[in-house]
Length: 123
Image (cartoon, one colour):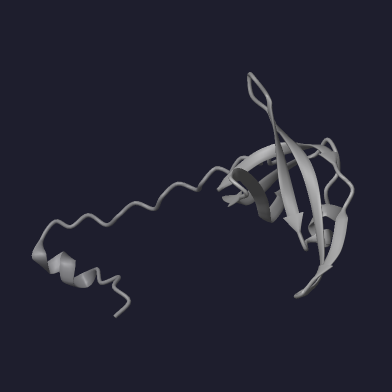
């Protein structure tokens, strides 16, 4: 899934150690602009370089996975980012294509004998 949003706030990183080794989790709040703007908390798990490249107030396209899990009878939902890209700025005014030269006139075929004379095939 993907969405385009503006970085609203970058939360402090949480670190720890598990049986698999050290880990880092950082939450970033994105605001999705629309008539009724919504905020989404996205988790960046073991992706400190992705978070370091984010700037508050800038627009990004974020690819996410949404997953829910149950713990002690309660359900928890994570929105995890797996790719983040800066929004491409609108292309600067594209220069118009130059006028094309007029097309060369095609040969006029009037009889079978002139067709044999005009052979512009490459083979």
